[in-house]
Length: 71
Image (cartoon, rainbow, N blue to C red; front, side, top):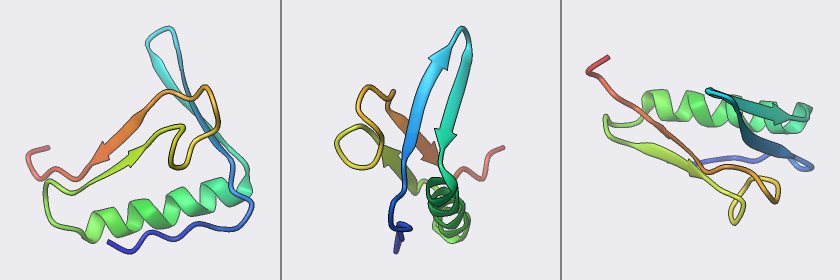
């Protein structure tokens, strides 16, 4: 899967009570949108893995998004 990042992206993932909160600037939202579109076309079981070491801002919660056909 070819994942593209828009220059200047910033993405933060956190938890508030029982909710996942994704905060991003314009470039971050465009990056996520493109990556989710790529994931939709990928094979079932494919996933995107985001954490503070590869894409998210420091202090962010880890986030995994998986393509599933059972839902």
